[in-house]
Length: 229
Ligand SMILES: Cc1cc2nc3c(=O)[nH]c(=O)nc-3n(C[C@H](O)[C@H](O)[C@H](O)COP(=O)(O)O)c2cc1C
Image (cartoon, rainbow, N blue to C red; front, side, top):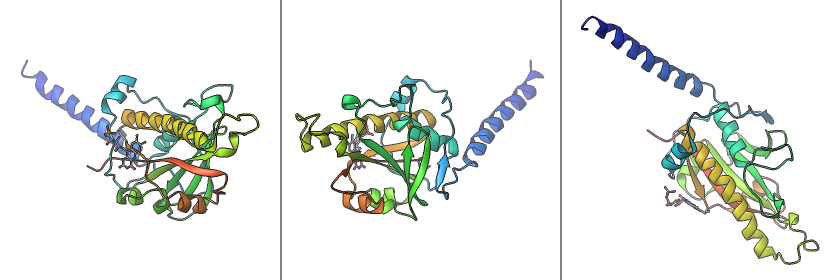
């Protein structure tokens, strides 16, 4: 019995080493953001159950400056607005299936528009524009902020006379909340931190992303990253 202990200890040490090593490899594979088009990987299984994610979900406001890995970035965007069916519909529901929301990913390298159909990011502005995505200090140094922009033109008044501009903004905000909660659960399932945010400087972001304020508005924002130790 005593002679089995060293072997058991060695095996345990090996297992711990392997677990740490695979984590390190993951974090050593940061998403390369400094390019105009970023083709994202297919989402990976997280290994966590939905119940695990629901148990862990909590708002995080302290982040490491470490960038997300390629897999993490791809998973976050697919959770927010990935195409999950042949008919082109997305991971989050949308009132009247009008899909007014475009998700913008903002990192130290720029503002990127997420293209759900092709699962890729297209840069629309270069440079560190994170200050245009929020009003709290942690936002400015966190590795990833998402901005949920609504195209209010999808609510065509001739087709939907019952939907006022005000109602359209509410519906778009509800769509964005569904997408953001998908991200919160994905983050919780993968060891990332996140926080949904209703605070952001709309005019600053629309200007930075070169969007017409008559047509577009920001309805929600979110910060995602590796929680500070
Ligand atoms: C629509 C919405 C807007 C929010 N806006 C902010 C925000 O601007 N800044 C922030 O730090 N947290 C924000 N939060 C996070 C809430 O403060 C947080 O969910 C609440 O304190 C409960 O904590 P929990 O998420 O850890 O359960 C927001 C949450 C929601 C749903």
